[in-house]
Amino acid sequence: VQLQASGGGLVQAGGSLNLSCTASGFALNRYSIGWFRQAPGKGREGISCTSSTGDETYYAPSVNGRFTISRDTTKNTMYLQMNVLEPEDTAVYYCAVDEVDDRDYFRLCTQVRIWHYLYTGQGTLVTVSS
Image (cartoon, rainbow, N blue to C red; front, side, top):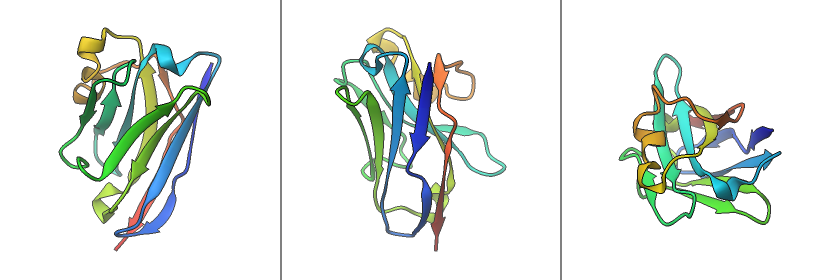
């Protein structure tokens, strides 16, 4: 069972990146999924989460309108499309999943600092230069 994140890198402010996270050993479509990040010297920040059905989606105010979370069940992969990147977006980005009632999916983001995810990816570094 594994989540493999990729797609990070160095980008200039205003640029875009698309992070991927491929699941192996389990089916992503059974779970609520999310992305969180951790900048140097700071705590975790839940930036986007979605319910198992994809019908409900949460975005942190800091990324709302710039980032988009999605899931391709045929590839068993989740994505985070990041546009109009800012230096403040520099962080290690992690994908994560958990099995929660769809009414509670947003807690994977809002309670990120205390939540124990079922599975978490290894993290991918995003660096945005000014």
